[in-house]
Length: 557
Image 1 (cartoon, rainbow, N blue to C red):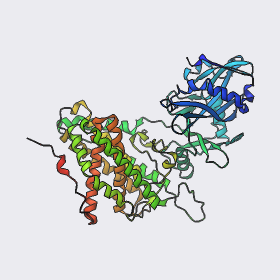
Image 2: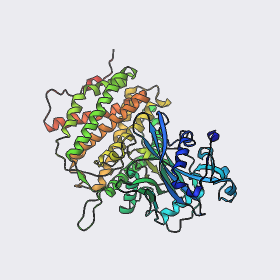
Image 3: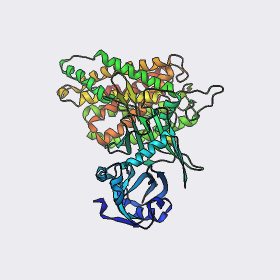
């Protein structure tokens, strides 16, 4: 039980915000065991040296009570500290029966501990389970409130996605445990409270607000508002965001898997079957992806103030160097990982791995060429973690979600502008995964020759890839400032496809060795195209060998 300890302090709860001793005591007693049970706390496996409350924000409640938003710092023996958001409510025993919700409705995971505060006994809880707290947050957003605090200001922004008259909707907490907390309002909106905080605005809020309020892009959960902590001489910090809820059947990964079932069942019969409506869905997703990037492309116009965070930019030397250094580091780590785990791979994966390693110089030369290759295409803010799982399938359309960016990247890196073809590469790789995972990991195909399965998988993938890409590019027309010409489109797409497949390789080697052939095949496909570019450019470097495709052939006796 978490509540083996209790807290006793003489100060009244309504006056606790400025009482540093109270928060120091809390951080040393009740909070460490509680926080370590929370799904959103990422430091469980690290050696902790203590917690401290850095800042306390006060949120007035409608009945005259208050909740507090604690900015909690977790310190470790090694590495930098982490900062988390923990909202607190105190439910005094003598007033519990006057609340609009039942104490029994607060789950164990929301109960921090028993406390006696200002001579009143009661229970400290995570305030998301306090209906009054949820209502206070939502009302503040609806009213565009600003609440001065002892350290800065809490600013509540209302977005276009919030309808008039919706301020008093019933609310609840989504029961799903995740790295953030989600509350729903009237089954119409959800409010995401960010738990782990970063020293700048969350890229998801920036993106969703821009797409909704400035570009009127309809195929995302519309931006309803945000909660921002502003303080002097430091970047704003995002605490939460409201979006419209979306009624959906499933995500596009699951939908694609359903479509692949029909294809899978025909393969053992040596039949190739793709329903026409599958192509229709793929075309529509390509179109919606292109429309998303058009909505993110906002060039400077005379007389209209530019939004610098979203203004398109060229391929600068700094960006080229950033991408090259990232690529080199990624490649070095993947080559080392592949060598260490080579004997664990199946024969087909070993052949692909060998060709990848033999192509090392060609890949390095291709990447080095990125430093000086003339590029007139432009870079913009993009989704950044785009795949089939980030697209919800509604009855007749798609809704794109989760604009937080690559999970392993820093917040600053997630805001770097790229060619939108980086998102396209992510979706293409996702389609490749969908068909490969289905064909190579199903009982229906266990007895089939792996090389035959690879050929069948490739045929499906190439058809779907080209359908998606043609629909995507058709949105822009030609020429378009984002894409100078087809040569640049092909070149940049190869850069991002290679980066994505090499990135995927690390996860598969470490966690799913039987899937290693999927990213390796993606890498080899790209290397084949790189070789074509070398030949067409006429600058084949003599000491760089050509692709050793003969290694892919099965040795027959």
